[in-house]
Image 1 (cartoon, rainbow, N blue to C red):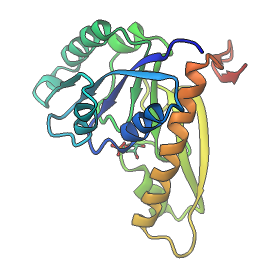
Image 2 (cartoon, rainbow, N blue to C red; image 1 turned 180 degrees about the horizontal axis):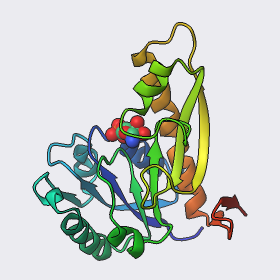
Image 3 (tube, helix red, strand yellow; image 1 turned 45 degrees about the vertical axis):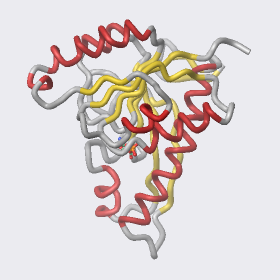
Image 4 (cartoon, protein in one colour; image 1 turned 90 degrees about the vertical axis):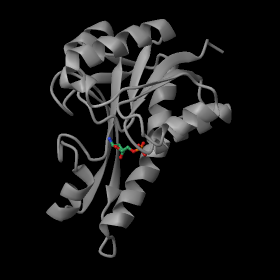
Length: 204
Ligand code: GRF
């Protein structure tokens, strides 16, 4: 078995996806090592999951994000100290700057709760529900300078049924996220994905 893939997870809120990743690792189903967790808000609930496992954390606050480059410079120094190969955004509500993207080319991944390119932005689940679409879903993609627009790694559909409410749809989306994100990380850890000259993600 290869060495576990060293990653950092970036969060802003509840961290249920961080928890799903940590649970898979604990259960021996994911060959990944979370070297640290970075939160854009000191009160991010998800920090507790890292603390419980004695995983190093870095908490930032809105003052430092007034200069996004300064925030990313602090983040970059920390990531380099932790020695990570991939930066995994899981509900991280700040945009990453070229400073970070250039330091980790095609190694910053993001999770988005819609089938991109539909419903970009911070309210994707609500926007899909409000639009009355019958199928939405979850996307994992590499991040680039354009918000929610980098090469798509994986997508899973979620049907919106007649009886669904916004709350029930959110639950269905999160359940799919918690399964899809660890699965993609396993593929990255196995070196099973690459970006071709067409800038599309391929398996092999
Ligand atoms: C997820 O729905 C993710 O797709 C979106 O933010 C949410 C984060 O949830 N970007 P959590 O903090 O992992 O619980």
